Length: 196
Figure (spheres, rainbow, N blue to C red):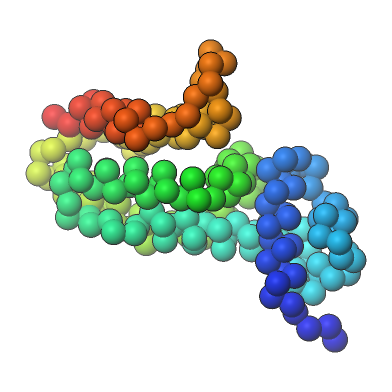
C-alpha cells in the first residue's frame, strides 16, 4: 500500500482549485489533474475515492478556512457599524490573500455542489451572525429586512469592488485598483443605507 505524501496532497488541492477556476467544473477531470500535478491518476485515488470526493473535500476544507476568517475578531455584541466593519475587513483580507479560493467558491455556488459546500462550514458563522443581527435589530440600529435584502446591500458592493480589483478594470473598461479610500467610502454608504 502506498503512503500518503502531505506535500503531494497539498499540490493536488492547489492544482485542482486552479484547474476548476480556469476551466470550470465541467472541464475538470482526474486525468487533467494528474497531468497538471505530474503524477499518475492512480496516485489521486490514494487521497480521494473519486472526482466528487475530491471536490467536496477541497470545498469543505476551504470553506472552513473561509469561515474561520469571517469570524476572526468578530463580536456579535458589537454595534452594527463596528460588526459590519469587521466583516468587511475579514472578507476583504481573505479574498486578497486567497484570490483563487474566492473564484473557486463562485464555481461551487453555481453548481450541484452548492448545498454540500455551504452546509459544511457555516454553522458557527450563522450562529454568530444570527446573534449579531438579533442584537442590532433589538437595539433599533437597522430596519428588519429579509436576509436577501440585507446581504445584497451589506456585501454585494464589497464583492463588486473586489471583482473589479481582481480583473484590474471597472465596468467601463477603465483601469481599476481598489484603494482603502474607495473601500471605506463604499462601506460608509452601505452603513448609511442600512442604518435607521
